[in-house]
Amino acid sequence: MALFDFLSKDIAIDLGTANTLVFVRGKGVVLNEPSIVALDRTTRKVVALGNEARQMHEKTHRDIITIKPLADGVIADYEAAEELIKGLIRKTLKDFSSSIRRMVIGIPSGITEVEKRAVRDSAEHAGAKEVYLVAEPMAAAVGMGLDVDAPFGNMVVDIGGGTTDIAVISLSGIASGESIRVAGNEITNAILQHFRKTYNLAIGERTAEEIKIKIGSAYELEEELIATVKGRNLVTSLPEQRDVSSPEIREAIAEPIGQIVNAVRRCLESTPPELSADILDRGIMLTGGGALIKGLDKRISEETKLPVFVGEDPLTAVARGTGRILENLDKYKNVLMKTKR
Ligand SMILES: Nc1ncnc2c1ncn2[C@@H]1O[C@H](COP(=O)(O)OP(=O)(O)OP(=O)(O)O)[C@@H](O)[C@H]1O
Ligand SMILES: [Mg+2]
Image 1 (cartoon, rainbow, N blue to C red):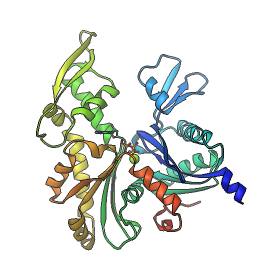
Image 2: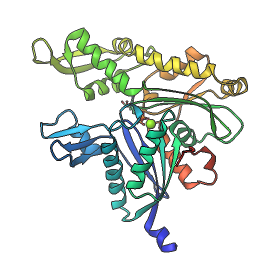
Image 3: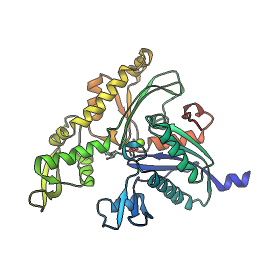
Image 4: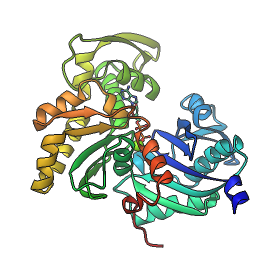
């Protein structure tokens, strides 16, 4: 048993639309890479994964295709998703040269039984002996250090790449929740569409994401910002650059931001009164990469009249939470998802 323990590892994974993070028991988060797979078009063999594949994304030639297997927070391409999980685990274990015993995986709360099954299968194919699933907002709450098992309502809003997962957590369960497929990617896409429609300027996804991160906002900024965008003019077909301001981008992303705010409102409306009272005292915790959009906390606070906080290191909260659950499986057994086998 001791030898087996020594050779096998317990790992936790945040399988995100945008990024996949791997946590190893006793080591913490050891890997954080984009959820992208590059395949050879004819043989379908994996050419690259994660960071390396992202470098290739949108810059490939005709023999290589890049795939984001987790569109909208759920598995859109099962085969590619399994390759991603296997590949990233292989990368992790190479440094530890061992096999996997237990595996905790964070998945969106709105996932179907079929999708759960697929995630579980992929984990088992990757070599895991015991697989545990946990809802991402629950994992995020644990990662942020909230006492999820107490009889108090905690509201968590996880704005990732594909999904915004909102949950009111109490007594280790989700008392009320809301999950929408509008998050960071939709916001990036709104910027892309804005340039296309307003200026006939085609820009890439990476450029649009950069603009969002640099100057995207959901509330007036004390000092408004300017950025330069480069793309291709659709009329002249020539490369072109132009300056854009933060108020203009705020307007361009108003629609998806509004949808996120409305989802938070809907979740509050369906929350039992005793838990609402707790949220009034404790406020709302934002996490996930989307929580970093400038002024989003202020905007949600203004619209809900509640205190809103951005959790520490929002891009790793789910991974740290799955890790903490892995390291204390007994304490957290009630937060795990019940699945049909
Ligand atoms: N500083 C930032 N400002 C605004 N958005 C950001 C920032 N940093 C990252 N993002 C956005 O956050 C999103 C990724 O967040 P995260 O890694 O939490 O998603 P994910 O867990 O992969 O997705 P999901 O939970 O939906 O499966 C991307 O859309 C990215 O553009
Ligand atoms: Mg996530």
